[in-house]
Image (tube, rainbow, N blue to C red):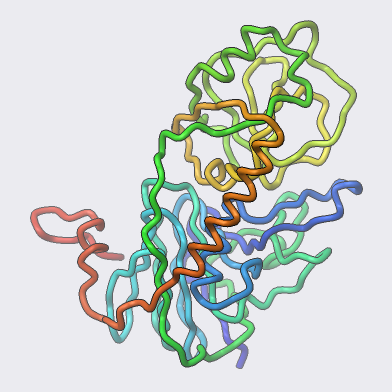
Length: 343
């Protein structure tokens, strides 16, 4: 019998993602991959997988899954997210640590209020075919993942292994960071197409993520960024994090599923070190931008990699306690000492 996860409820938008499909943008195939590559890599590290292995990316609201394997080691990564476990040892487990479950256990994923996405990794990985070198799902072209689409109720997610290895569970240190930290950008490649006051507005004004946001990109509410003369350019290549501005003047930040070319001027590009932060943003979240030079952006990328390596090196054994998780309990909507629990 093939080991796997049975989908009892799919959540809003849950897909199989890895770090992306590289080398095919010249034929119009987006990179796709995780919105928050940091979260995906951390979830994999917690279960002992290679960091780029395919996981479940969970957006908006989480799925409910049944373990259909002898045992399965899982880990969730995402700010404030948690797992509700129903089975022999019912409990709530905060994101950032691995745990091993048995056949018939039911897992409900709940996102936290701090992030639009979280990542569920399973030891050994998800056994879906790689398409053009990647397991990532690109829904618009029905490419990759599980049948090229988001999960649906009654789906079966095949796993590569049917029994978790015998080892201690791992836990990551609590992550710190300011939600008000500005997103760093490199100006261009077409910033000279914009009026000086538009450049000033980009770097001085406050924006908010609009309701028009998905894996392709997020439209921002805020001051309109006006062009000097015309907004139609010869289509050229687009990088993840590009901030393009159509004739409306309302900027659009392009994300993992962005088109490969575009004909609107791009006023700036989010640095790679800040793409995970951008990927966690939810509609109505505030955004501020600050400009950095290219050389500084490259060093910030190297520094982010060093910090992630230090985080993984510092993973520690998790308490072997199947009882009450007080920290998660206090974060689970207490009313007069009673928790809502999981439906």
